[in-house]
Figure (tube, rainbow, N blue to C red):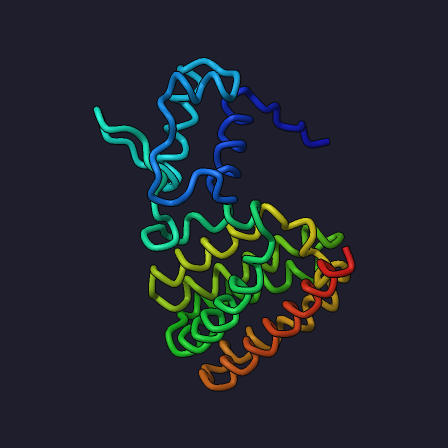
Length: 230
């Protein structure tokens, strides 16, 4: 059984500040109240506040200038894809846009993998695909499926595709348990994904793109239907 994480006061404050920023209580471009006032308002010490600030600066939501103060960063204009997991936790509405990018990037990756994959990468893809069929349950099948897509990205020979794939999977993490529906039957999950790997193996970029688009569209629909029912 997995041990549940224990939240510290800093964790709780970080989450509260993040929500207050994303909901507009602290608008983009505005300076936060003085530390002493803010700490009193949240009922924490200034040391705790500084730790929470540090995390949110690292996340790209705040910027601190010595002698001036701490300002809410224009994350929508200046932020990167690393913000996606946090934004999904705040609002699942982001998933629709993530899925749109997943479809377009996934199709490009499959097409490029078909023309660039090495024999060793093809053997890895087949082994990882077999692991989807052999998974015992939805959760391990979901994780095995993700490894196939990571391998497809590596097979393109373009490291940026690999990083983009990792970023999109990281964005799913906050709601991964709600996206398991396409993988509850590992055999069916394997059957949906196999045409992508087969097209990559054949070196047919056009067919690989079409197969990836069909796979990503089908699994997206299943995931969104499950989310809507939940």
